Image (cartoon, rainbow, N blue to C red; front, side, top):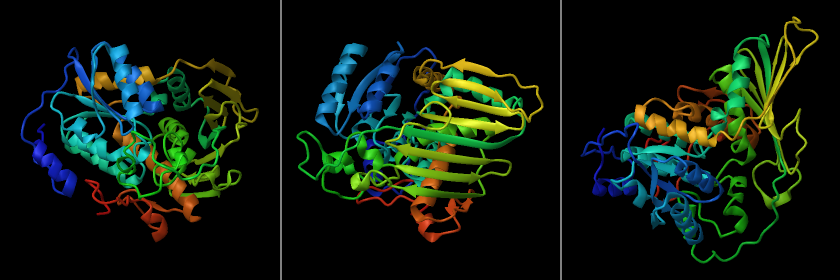
Length: 432
């Protein structure tokens, strides 16, 4: 494993298309070594992620990063209180990934800022914990995957349901074959997220808004497009489909096996929220796999979903159905089945995030692949994006998984890529 010099790194940021030449070797983190991290982004997810990392005694946070001075001050105070040291504070993530004294970065930014910090961190010899969804576009997800492969980095995507015990138990039951042949899978998320209309206005004091926009298009400042609510605008995210949807689709593919559908259809839109958001508040997507059909559905500002739990999945086989959510899981026998299935009910396990972080830290020492590695993360994030693309273009999507292109529609295929605002460019992009 080699590392680039600071001079080469800044040249790459400017040109971003030149292969990086690495100069010095980096020792891998041993199982009992001190692990020094840099935390990039300190919003809602960043707060929880930082706490989960600092709960591990070998972890020290050396530097925190955010474009909002208010968030940055809170991050410093958090580390001082929980970690016992005062970290450096920077507003530019490049000042984090270029450092020689950190082993890993924790990327908890809005979706449009997942790819570049993760890719640059891999290129400079850092391991990466990056929030879900892996990236804002499919092309960005591919870039993170390629960077992790080339530079032999451990990357964990923050789909912590994979580390939740009751989710693991439910998946094991589906894979046991007791349900019989799985013919249909249904995933859903029904969330009562409060969002109100807001007018454009001045940028808040202490916020580097141009840097916050980064590679996304230049826009007037609007509080609805900023902290927290950024996820409802295409420039920065993919709405509920790529937010909770990635958790649920991950669960579905985990149980049935990673494979790509032959075609995807979707319908929906903004049905009840007017022009307050851009991404659909109501959507249904249908994925046709070789042996089963996956149906995804969501509602925003609507909390009464199928079965029980606001977000979950149901696996229907010849002998019965298994229903799993954040509240637990149950098995419901089908009277038309073989009669060998017994009803079961299981309570939820504790939050999986601490175990997910622990899995990442352990893999930093062993160099094994973590539970939500970039192969898995890219696959499930791409599925969510394909559902969104089918809905946005009102077209059936036929996906070529080898070329990672949509062959059925040029309009839809254009949304696979990432259009970056100057001077930002995406290394490893297949779209140029």
